[in-house]
Length: 359
Image (cartoon, rainbow, N blue to C red; front, side):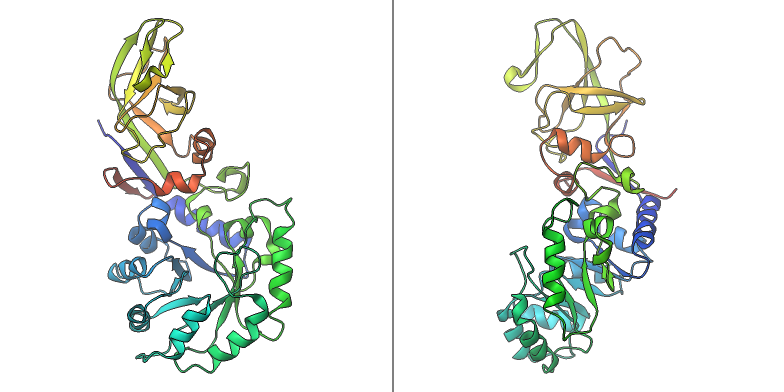
């Protein structure tokens, strides 16, 4: 009997990378591995993605873990660096850094480094999170070009706010704002995240940076990975550890939040919010057992969930339960739990066993 397990299909991962290249055949691919590769295992995922052109992470500790794991490809720090000592580490470790504000540029201009650093200049075209005002692009670019600590071939990037919705004009506006303010710059560009790759072909440019879609999950609203010919990489499973008879009128779980309307059977699954399953998943959230759908009843607890089996006596002690995966899209579970797939994938906790497979 295997308890909480995240089965990671590396073949599906690389099929998704191939799908990215189909959608953006003229672009190089920067695979986004932040947040432990969206919960899939940072170093193992990087080692498997041998056909990626570069990797991107949020913070320098993630980049250092990749180098320690033997990854030699370019690694981009999407948030840049914020301390002079980290700037020195980036130079010695051959990390690329994103520059998105005056303080970072000033630090670069006044540092003493062993070698120049590759820089991506980020413009804020409407996300209003990180990035310089586009009107400052020429000034920042000239200062970077003249800085002894900056390597040649400065690249430019931005980030979309609403690319998951093809009916929203925000992405078109952001692209127009971006291109309008880089007319004098002819270096490599990177605009498209996963949603840009799928929904906005004009954003592909020299580089694309897929994140969520690499893991087989749709980056678009009201869609699943299968809608874009993507394959689920994570299959989250556990087992039935007890089966109980519950009489009509009896309640199940904390707060007596669910009451049986008829005599029924309950399967107890070794999976809870201590494993990363969403505590707020409501009654009716589906699971798969032996190829059939069953529904969660009662509150999710730290270590267990309860599933109504009804009069189906085919389910036995020890049977495997799929919480999400190829047969049950994580997008569907996210909808039940009123959250997004990103959160579910990233919230898997260390006590869950990881099993990497190739098909």
